[in-house]
Amino acid sequence: MATKKVTPTDEFVKGLWRDNPVFVQVLGMCPALAVSNTAMNALAMGLATTFVLLMSGLSVSLLRNFIPREARIVSFICIIATFVTSVDYLIMAISLELHRALGAFIALIVVNCLILGRAEAFASKNNPGRALLDGLGMGVGFTLALLFIGVVREILGSGSIFGFAVLPDTFQTWTVMVLPSGGFFAMALWLLIVNRLKQREVEAARQAQGVVS
Amino acid sequence: MNAPLIQPQTSAWSIYRAIVGIGVFCALVIVIVFQSTAERIKRNQERFLAAAISEVLPATKSTIAVDLGEDGQLVATTESLTLPVFLSYDEQNRLVGAVLAAEGMGYQDNIRVLYSYSFEQHAIVGFKILDSKETPGLGDRVEIEPHFIANFEALDVRLNDNGDQLNNRIVTVKQGEKNNPWQIDGITGATITSEAIGNLLNDSAGIWIPILERDAATIESMPAGGQ
Picture 1: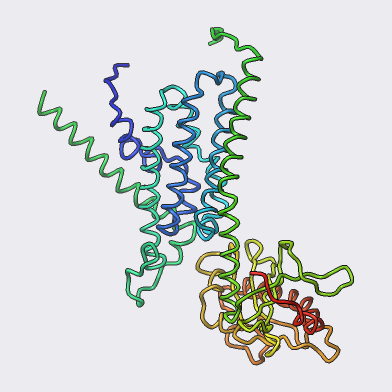
Picture 2: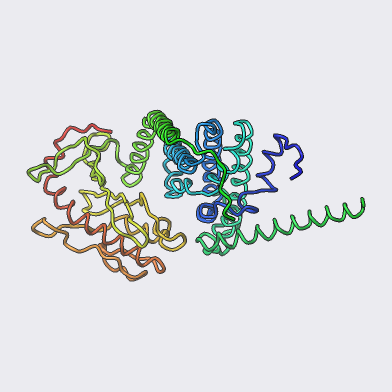
């Protein structure tokens, strides 16, 4: 495969748009749909996941020559679970209310396939610097995607953003948007928009190629 | 398809070494994080509980945690109980009431609440949900619906003449059908949750209010301190 040299910026940027974990890879759907009922919950979940991605990516990358191929999955899961436990304690130390709002989903970060996926596909094959950039890019991409879903759901479901009312009291809130099914609606809406934009990008590239040749 | 995979066999020793090594590394990380956050988490929990107590009984200036002693009498305790009972004192160290935690099954999961009892009014005078996973937009309206919260401004929990049980069972009635001070005006669309709250309050108050009323005299003579 002919590959051009990947710059550190590419490593970071790919998670934001080209390989966005939620809108393109469609990974980590469980937290993305369950905890995005308000913008605040979405942001907190995204940041917690980013922390786990960064720390597990760094650890896996540092230990990559020490972990034999046969024991890699168990080792990765063990490392990921460690940082999920850590983030659980850290959130409790920051705010109990936030911990209460995120509920069981903090513990479930451990089974977010995005994190194991990055550990297996990237961190275990690259140096710590690149692993950190990849983790940061994917984490920020995940957080932004959750935030996008969360904002739509909170506006329609509660008439507010980050708890601040943005719609008049006369607005009849859509309860369905706060319920899990609302997550699917908001997700579908964003997938539609993102895919449309990506399609345009491809068409534009094709046209440009046509002009050149 | 059946071409043998030519990959070097990893020795069992290096697999053991990796797994034990990772285990030790992970244990170390968890211990460090636990140790460095334990103090803050404890402070957060105390602050959260203190804020919740003064929310359900605003006159509270200090509290004493109490529990049942071996002889069935109320005694002060320093142990942290899962469903604690606090006696609450005002600035002049006068007993103003009791704050109790109660738990019961809701629609989705257990609901944990904190409520306050006034010795003067013989009524539940404050209420707050500590933990619930009720359906957003339906069951969780018990936390915000004004007419539901108004139930707990003075919910009658008077004892019978013998002083051993509630004179009237706390019951949740349909929305708009509350006629008596011991009834809880329910929420249409959150029937199961509002009934669950009625039941868990009835169970908790049925046990604790007779004890609190019986031992009120001895409690009042306790030196107020605590938080």
